Amino acid sequence: MIAIRSAVVFAAAFAVAYVVAVEANLAAFTYHPRLSEWDWGRTPSREGPAMYYYGWLFTATGVAGFLTLLGQPLIRRFAVPLWLGWLVPLAAMLSFIWFLRGFFWR
Image (tube, rainbow, N blue to C red; front, side):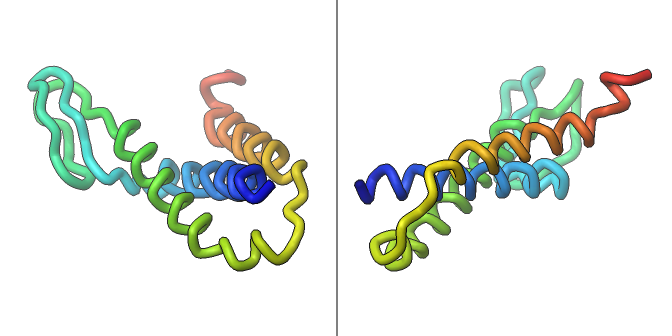
């Protein structure tokens, strides 16, 4: 049961951390596909576009994992509502639709 509670907390924390990482461009590393090179942190593109997506995923995973580990005493003591694991990611998806509304509604 604790594994399910931890997964719910991780899913909610990951969704929030991913939105923050994308909006603040907090990429742990950058991939330059044209050069096939990786750089630590957010670096500007050199030749062609730079990909920050993998860095955002890594950042959000690290933050969510840290928060899940930090919250283990609370997770063991209190019940975590299961709806938290789908409502927060759904809100994150809706926030991305709002942020990218210029691509959807022109």
